[in-house]
Length: 258
Ligand code: PEP
Image (cartoon, rainbow, N blue to C red):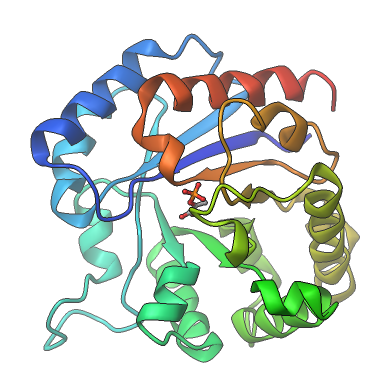
């Protein structure tokens, strides 16, 4: 059985003091059995070390929101995989739609980042998802196919053990327009079938596919109960400890139905 995951993407929010408060409130407020649900925080880069100290000794994982595809050197503003590992990260997000949109990240750049992150020993949340027009034009699967083909170019099957896919329809991110349970399930099933065709049924069966896009305490259970939805990547609602802990609890409740 695939272990459910709930991941908080704090984006470019918080201060060192509010980031600490949030980490502690979630750490101490969650009563969910950590054998059932895996939780990861992705704070802004300057707060990684601070949050790392606060979750030390717990089962909560730490991730970067992005990573460079290059090694350490003259790349102003970038963060190398080595640096994420150095401050306690086991994870990094790659290919978030905000990186694709505001930083022009192409599938080839994303592929380079994935390869390097995995080579260095990080685990990756790979974000994919269609824009509103693509969904309206029935191009969701074609778009997912293109992003998956690009991201997985020249990847060995063994690399997939380090990858969790996050299906994040762009029209649902930060908009309050959550995908229906059926839309999410259909996209996740498509992604799993793509993985199965390319890497085999066993790899596809083990692959965790998270849903992201306006997940809140009141819609999490329905989404997380879908057979191919293995967790949630949460933006806005991850900034509120009560909401985030409630989503973690929904994941635990849904796991008993799978
Ligand atoms: C995200 O940024 O990955 C995300 C899912 O954001 P939100 O939950 O705010 O839609």
